[in-house]
Length: 321
Image (cartoon, rainbow, N blue to C red; front, side):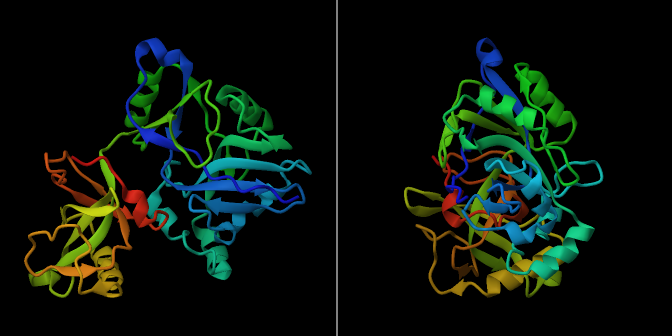
């Protein structure tokens, strides 16, 4: 059966629902992984597509067994691919070694033995027929009845009401955050909806690297800092310089990536005041941690967290002053 492609529904950054609305929402852990829509035609095969629509099936050979878990019933599931650390939490740095290997099935198979992936399934988009028009609480009940628990996949819990308790638990357990989902909401493919609210336990931003400044001393020949921006109204707005957050190996790898993307033209809408700046094509997306923003939209005390190869530069848009 040829299943229709479905773009994943996206959550909007926000805060907890008001106490008066609390029992109208379900709360799920926000996982730190790669979003994946899973297609099960019912013939024993499985296909995984990333948020971008890219076929990533070959990158995760351990998930092939999913093709038989629902028998001959065709289905489309929504979830997140993780690599778990020793505490059973998603570790994005471990996952990065598994991402981007759809074209290298041999390497993917070897890495699957050392750092196996784990799929958490949190929604049912099709089960025989289309389920996207059903309420979240109905889809959730269907998902729980499927009992998708296996060696490399599971169904995480969802708590109805008690949002403050759920958020506090994610903070105490060192988890990324919480996703709040309205019980009466339908699934909106490809939409960033207010019916799903994501709350991160640390303030982060996805940024595009547009340039770098050479390091000095022991960092000679390496980037001392990267110049980053975010998309706004079709432009790349400069939001700051990031000079911390890498170990030696990560800084060396970053230097290689930047060296392959050099250009003579500044990609930002206004040229930042940065001595000795070197410009690059705005293709690399990264995630940074920061304290607050200035009134001009610059990031205060930014620190590099990681590259985000699963995101496109266009997805770095933000609400800037």
